[in-house]
Figure 1 (cartoon, rainbow, N blue to C red):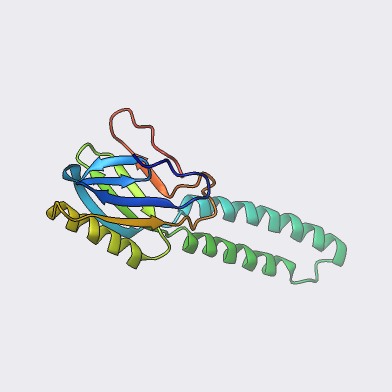
Figure 2 (tube, helix red, strand yellow; figure 1 turned 60 degrees about the horizontal axis):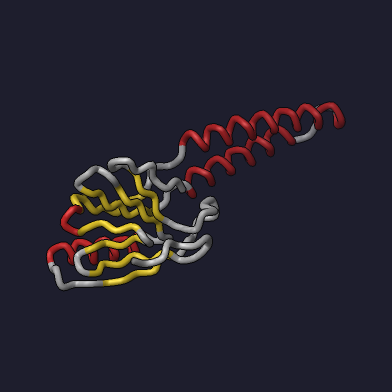
Length: 167
């Protein structure tokens, strides 16, 4: 059995003897019911929170600047434009490419990588391994997101008694 991924280290995904290993988690290939690569939907809730927070800060700064310069500066417009740029950036960066492997039990393994092509290649290898029992492969997944401080790039949900690993 492989060692669990350590903080900040790459995660190994491999198929060996009809078992899919994701780090130290194992799933038999015959239990895989669904493999798909797609982009997650934008985080609208997170963007809305940022928008409201930045608008409140913009109004506070605008009120402060209006009291010091007599209300003649372009500060409110610039601050609102800055707020919209930040919100758009949050929406664009929250669309991560993901590979989802769902098992018959309803549990899922979600992997993230920087490009869709890398994920499609891994998905193709997993599907090929399901039809060809002798096929084995290994891939090393590098962590690319800055919000995950725990080291792995896998999120497992569902199953019996599985609380999951939250990213």
